[in-house]
Image (cartoon, rainbow, N blue to C red; front, side, top):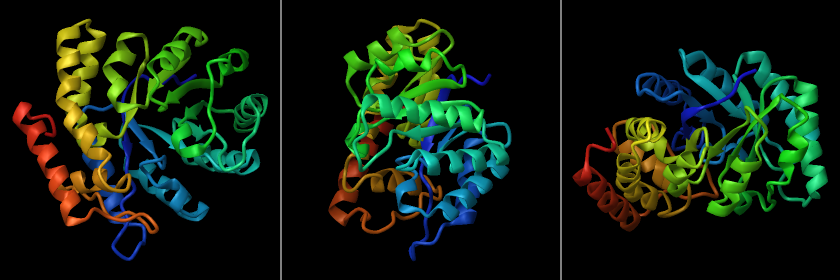
Length: 297
């Protein structure tokens, strides 16, 4: 069974100014990551604006990504508000050859902890493929807790969890209570160095889209036990992480990619692109990152 480990940029989905999916830009962006040393990509997630896309668009984007990915592992978000629709999306993603599906916890309504555990168990049973849970309560309105690990322990098809909540104590509990072979992946950018040093298997983060090679370097330092270098690299990434929060997320991520000559594209309404003033703030953060090292190369 597939078990993710290493560096996986959470990749934006490029849209054209008129809001259409930029298929050429999407293909080119995946091709760029093929040569950065990352292990794979997390696609059509929060930074990928999946909630702004129709099911048909998500499926088309996934096909393009898989076709362009070369040897990159692809973890694709199948998350929908209902278990039924999530399973349908997961089955499609399985058919086109993704390595694993990840599903944001159910959103809008508020299921019980038992209901959310059942959600992931049903996806794993029906799709019969590697499945990852995704804890991001600041967007979903729901929250996974470390207790869910007890439910996951009985199904080897649930292979990992991305924790984006940003609570270091909770992250540590996910790691401590994870079943053997289970991949807890850091999704909160400021906690990457801490999480990997505490036993997380890798990162699924937005700043790795902006600075993939730096994140690979940090990950290698962490698994080699070079804590000084690991935390120094985290410090070098912090300006990028701060820049990501400027404006309406994920507009700044797309702006930073475009600033590197990459097809970051536009966000979809009702999200808004950065104002001129916000662009200046991001530019200042990027200057700081570049001054510390060639962190964005």
